[in-house]
Length: 490
Image (cartoon, rainbow, N blue to C red; front, top):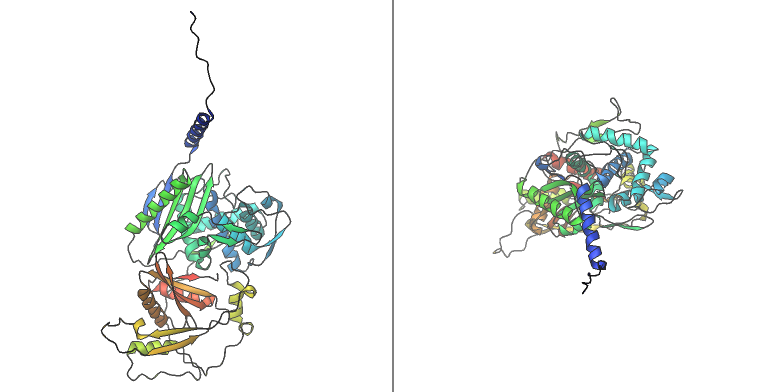
């Protein structure tokens, strides 16, 4: 009797799928990039933890931080403006995804290119930014390298402005943390762009590639993701809690989940190791002219603003200003009243177009917001200040506290503000604001105190300032060792 052999049957569809997935995972593991990371105290630049942080690896779209840094510099120096109409070059339109979908020959404002490069990580937008500023990708890459050297990014070489894999286009976790720190401190008026989960890019609404961290980690407010097959999943991230700001960088994570887990663990480590207070040591600002080649003797240079205040005299009283009687008032209350009361008899401020400084602030005010002409008029606001803003109130004291009512106007293009910290309670935030207003009465004149409740606490802010006033106030506060960053128009 013959024994019949079992008939061979093809693997089921499910089995084939499993085999294919395992093969892909194995292939990915073979070509996976080495892992590297760093944790830095953003206030001081001190490295708190590092792993392979000096290993040269593919940065992917972390590159766009440098592209945007140079764009911010070019706008600040008057090389180009946010409202410059840029004609899209064929080489920019031909870039592979992620992209905004630019078409050769179309025109688009620089502000929309910046938004889409920062938020969506659009390769076509980043490429067009470089061409618009320097004339070609090659010239812009030279400028990128000159800036990198001036910042102390010793192990970085840029070949393009979007981060697509190219021979020799390499950086390190340490260098990218240095770059991220410069973005935060050199351009605080633009930094909040990186925390937007969505933005209007002119031709489309774009969504942030870093939404998971922004929505899921307390205090996270940026900065930039990156991914290519050669690089793996990269991320430079920053978060702030109270007075502490941490910067972390991860290269070579194996997936979105792996990247998120690693970066949050590193941020936790940073907050656990960093001191609760530290003197802010701002990095030197870097400027490289549009003609810099990156060669020795090029136009790259660093610019240090000392921030040391020799004197800060109180400005003289305005003509006709009403003085507050000091009888019966404490020294703090009198100082508060003197700093905040504005006479109803004072002359009305001239319109913005008659004030060159305000007109200039309106023309340059950014955070990539719509043109000033598109913004609705800002209405005057009132602030009610009491003695409770300065000193604790005994709950047993039922006597009413006199109020000082001050009317502050934000007319005249005051579209900027400052943030002086995040606090655990609204009361602490209010007290910090009062102290800031008293210390910087001249710079913050006309500003409006505001406390915004966030998931991580209460943000203490003074809004309705000009660009110059906000910058001056922050520099003075930082010179005293206090935390402060600017808030641009939204």
